[in-house]
Image (spheres, rainbow, N blue to C red):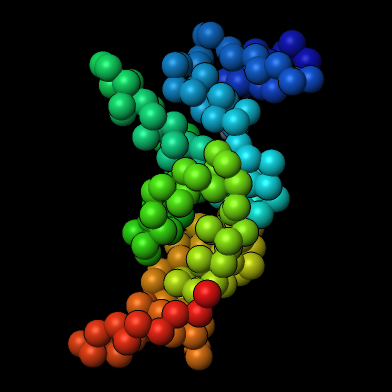
Length: 167
Ligand SMILES: [Zn+2]
């Protein structure tokens, strides 16, 4: 990347080095880039670049809110991050998300989880994300399950969860 491009970018990673532009970056930028550096080897391949950015931003805000004093971390990915929040709202646990990001296992923790708990499968959700079709991605992340798959999201309303799971 040229010096000129660097001057207009908040952060860039070149040959294994993160360059943080001090004129427009904040502490949250360094946190965000450090998180990227520490993502599990299988993470981006399973979830795609857009869900990756949304999760990295969600984790940045999570981490910065726990600093003393808390650091504000703005939303720089207004399409991506609400999709990650939609997955959490649908029942994906924060610990499963964090573990998949940092230590691996996204195929099972994210993709298979979505296949069994969301209204569309992970392949469709990832496709919407990569197309930056945020409304469709959020809709597909709503609780539910494909026809024929029993999960909490598709039990008969009022009848309770019958406990059947596809694992
Ligand atoms: Zn990023």
